[in-house]
Image (tube, rainbow, N blue to C red; front, top):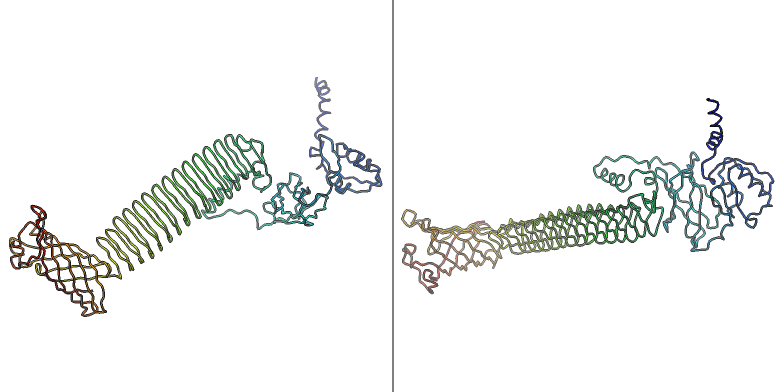
Length: 626
């Protein structure tokens, strides 16, 4: 029974076993050793074909069959043997088990394409290297060695006598070779292993982020992607998903002019336009357009327009227009018009017009117009425009205008205008103006401040507000007496040109009576120097006169003061002058307020049934300190 089974199986074994011993490598890469001694060329070709398990096909007009040849080939590929026999005078193509020999084309002229081919080998071991990139630096025409170390590259023949080729592989030293334009022979290019180029793992957080982006997103760990650089170019490609399309497994190495991705695509780059149903991912540069339903990613320089339903992300510098439903993320610098539903982010610098529903973030300098729904944020210099409903933040210097609903913040110098609903802050020198609803602060002001409260170290212009404090400005504590109130105190703060006056007064002799008169008020003034020791003052103040705690009764004493300030010492001066008083109240001058002094009224007008204005001239004298 067993013997019958073996006999039945024997024909199958006789068929299969020899097949296992056959050389499965491509015909041109099959290696043989052969010695040819004064033989006709056609005989030599027949022997080579028999040993290599294939056949030749050629025309006698192409091959000089009667030529006598003598060669010794030891462990050489069929390709190398044919190159040695014909010295580049013929070309060869493989069809099934046949090698077709044809006459080589005439030498290419300047400006025409020339084909250069050969092998790349390890300089130390002689092993042929696969996945080596070869390219011509001027035109970037490129090729990649196959698994046998072989390459073919077509380059434009220059007018010069040499063609320069760059040879690169991961962990090997970069190599540049010069090939004579009249060369037809196979090249053998040795490259040297370089320990210094061995990829090491970085420790910093920034380098880890960069490594994750490159190795997981732009360059996932596939052998070809790790080793091959700019290699192939196509006018058009179509893919369903990455690696399933017209560029097959080589899609990461192809730069396409036009790219159409049904769901998503993955390529080396785009030179014209790329459209994806869901996403587009490119390892290298992209121009001039990317459109995707969900997201676009470019690993190199981006130039043109990007439109995505959710996200546009670029690793290299970006220039053009970006529109995203959620965010535009740029790891490098960006010069663009960028519109995002949520945020625009740039890690290095940004320039152009940026509009975002939430805000614009630049971990570097901002140049251009930035409109954020809530905020604009820059870690370096910025300008000329930042507009937001809440916050504008610049960690460097700013030139231009900041407009915020709440806060403008510039850490260093500012040139231009800051306008905020609540507060403006400049940590350095402000050259221009600040306008805020509540508070302005700057170290040095070469301009003006306007807010309820203004603070600065020094100012060349005018701070306008309810209260302004200039560290190196104008400060006076004044004790004085006038014809109505014999005890007054006032604090003047700001600058000489314009300062605030906070004041209070009293009639001390009324404190024990039923009617206790005291006053509080506010005003502003100006002090102009006539000489080093003499100044002239002009003040406008308004005081509410109180009788005990009567806040609901109108007794408003308004004064226009003109006087002199005589400096006795550096920090003490004597002030005196005249007041034009305007008293707005319903009471008569004969009331308790005027029982010890009755002014001489020079003008009176009944403004309404309970509003009477009386005017008189009075005086004031006092001492000022500081």
